[in-house]
Image (cartoon, rainbow, N blue to C red; front, side):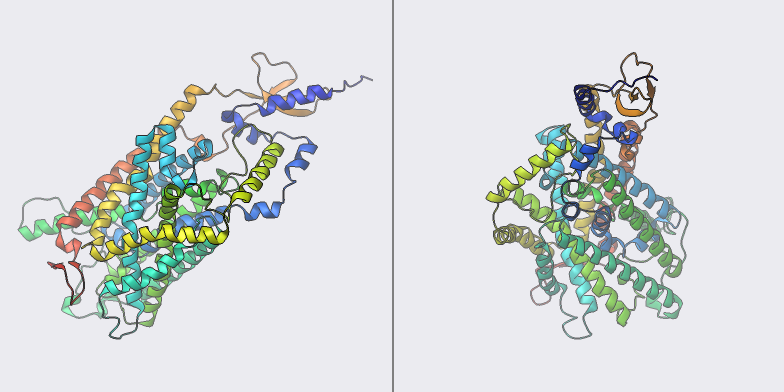
Length: 583
């Protein structure tokens, strides 16, 4: 019979070298083809302790809970206002579209993080500086860190109002909310000492936040379905009923009529814009994408799954809670819904809802505060190694270094870093010191700013659509153009057959392939690779522009209309500094 020609070891080494030298652009195709590796490589690849590696990385479930718990405590009690103002059909549609555009922005950011590997603590600034330059990096720092700075005092106020809600009917409950701000701020500051968004403690906080949000939603629906608005016969509690499929009953074309009618129609349009803005600020995974992406085992697949989990939870809460409240109580509910005039604030279940809402909001404050403190620590103490609980590097790097060499070098570098690393107590002490200035600034703003929710409306318009949509789309477009111009086009992959006819390796296609090659049908592995960049960027920018217009109109209306703005005051009775209660 025919003798099989045995391959020489040098031939195998050359084939392996050709396989490992493929460009990073064609690496997804290689992964999809599932090329077999030699058994000795497979044995070496699993040499590190799998259990330790599992503990050192963030799972996709933990990531999904973290992204959902970042802003869901405020969203779950405000979606009823959004649904009533926007409409019971237009509201869910808008929520799905805005959430999809936000997910596109997060996916684009994550793709750039995996390719460029910026410093996680630097956030959006690092990506902008690498792709466009220092000025774009400064823009990213302002919109990301500026949002954190201006959101923290609002979170303290929400925590204070929640604590005031579950207090018993005593003299202490009637005290000014500023006293509660000071008291609850200590709890929020203590949670900030968790120190890392990707540690085990942060994972436990994410789970606790999900449980608290689920309890808040359950109690809210229980109260809504067991309290009929018709049972309140007081004339002062007569409220508009009904709803619309798109818009609200006060949304009419501005035409002739009395001054009060025109003012009511303007307020209806303002509420519609404010309700539309809720779909944007209630889900903001892009604010944490750079910080948490590199802590995942597979920064692309795991991020996609975690993002899908958080987006599904967000849409489910919006639709279920929003529709239930609007159908039961009518369209004109407040944000939060507990401020509605028919809310039974004295019932025990209401107090329980306030308690769990307080816990979830305090955790949300901690996540924002940790991201802001990490950025401050990176600038003030750049040489100190902060994260000692989890790795911030990906388990599968994008370079062409073999797996065994990468693992060896990583271990050597880790040992060298551990020799010079400060003790855990020194890191905790340094973090405590760095976290004090952001905390004191938030506490001061919570007491001094006359209308925090008006400030939040302006902050939303100035930061949320920019971080969710504009910034990722602009960077990703430049990133894809640079990569297309600097990298060679991806080559077709061929399956190489050995002399026995068995499929042995996957190799780039030469211009004239020999007869023992056959073409493999390959397709992109990751979601962001399956969508053309032009379509992805266009969709994200288009939705972002609509969101920005709605947020800007809502912010202006919040500042100009005293009925939307509410009372404005600085200080408490006895030491009132300023008061403008026109409502």
